[in-house]
Image (cartoon, rainbow, N blue to C red; front, side, top):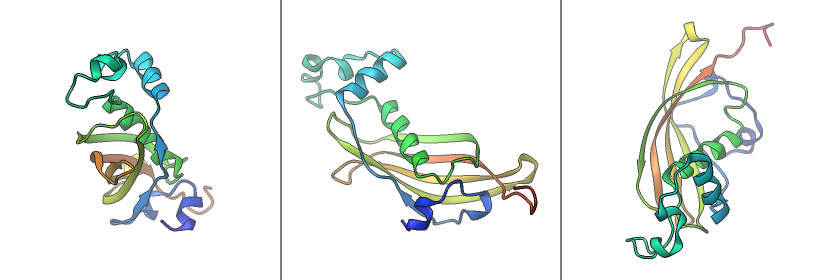
Length: 159
């Protein structure tokens, strides 16, 4: 990832190119993350919240909620700044959960532009991304496609 992209805020629809790739920094998943997500979502599945029960499962320990991983992936991606102030809507998601994320795992997100479709009537265009959530061992834990509606660059004098 180039320094100019990581420091830049809010790319416009016209700035995205198919094949453009970005990667977030890592974030370690904590027990507090899981407890707070359970409280927020109401999902107190013992696989996430009960260490004794989780020890009896195929994973042998508590697993972070899949939707917690997806939520953190969204936040990490937004922190790169490439959608800040230019994203109009998150419009589609096709997502797969491939491997567990455990307490202590550090995840990061690799994002690659796969498609663009101009939508002048909506003030921009759709940008589709191939997204992978990777752990500290470079194993893909979650992956899929995100589509967002991104604003077009303002005409001269509109900025």
